[in-house]
Length: 176
Image 1 (cartoon, rainbow, N blue to C red):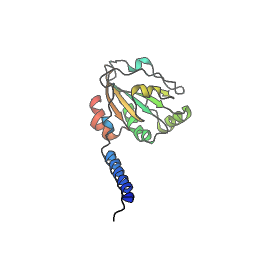
Image 2: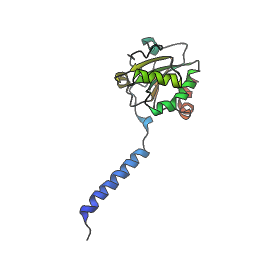
Image 3: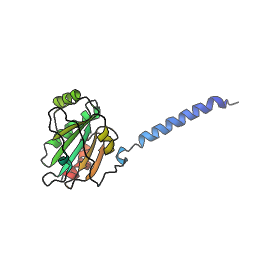
Image 4: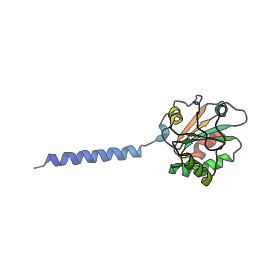
């Protein structure tokens, strides 16, 4: 005779494991919507980061001389932020790209050490110590990057690190 009391918890456990693996395989963080695509970005009200160039209200305004602006939310404690940093360094050498760095929920000394150690690809920087700006922008986690066109509208949002592959498939299209 089958002892159902022992089999039911095992069956439920196996079902939960199957659902978890199914959810992981179907994870598509690209499909997380952004309410700001095609719209003007929210203001960035940031705390200065050391004596590095500060983000101003004008940095998110339409411009004639810069093709795109990248707004990159990052943290020194974030391993994917380190992985993406070389790609940001490459962007910083392009004349038609401006990069604004938003340091998210980080200690100032740690953020400055990160910039010193890995380089500073950002044209302007500020910190978001409480995460209020990230919340306003709809950031799900760091790193997360928004692309703003010449008209000052957000045209793309990328959650996660920007890799060479992401650059080739997506961001390159906005630059050229």
